[in-house]
Image (cartoon, rainbow, N blue to C red; front, side):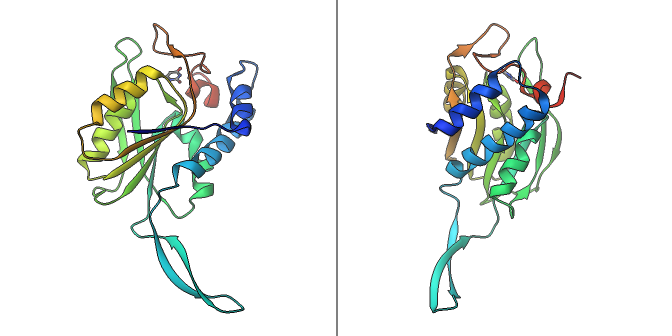
Length: 212
Ligand code: URA
């Protein structure tokens, strides 16, 4: 698995404000959107392109455009939804699918409760949006689901990641034959006993949308 930890002062600055418990939901949502656009720039470095011929007002030339089939962006509900706008700003022609995953707060096991995805993902590059790579349970379950449907390249964009989550993800897919990339804003220290990332930012879904 390829892991890219963003190392950019603007990303660090925005993440610091995001982590601050005094940051309110509207500001939090705005920052998430901005951060995802910055992370998406790195995450899409390998997006497939094709060469086309065009005419500028001056001459004929060739250039690159995004290839078909279009990439698929999959936010993991609920918190990943807060990342969608930032991603589609950069990749407006991407197809969007949804995957609803819930984690049992006692066992930390993830399960799927909803999905709206193309049935066949063969040959598709898939970008999964989930703000927190904590235990890895949610992303492992999501990737298994996507690989079953044929996804042959998966990139996850996470605002924060834990060392435990990265290891779990790597262990789960190192022999899968599917190239997996993780792009994250920061690699945090550890998980606490409740499976929260430390220092982290708390519950991303609650901070985006309030406690339900
Ligand atoms: N999910 C969150 O929202 N926050 C964490 O710290 C871990 C999982």
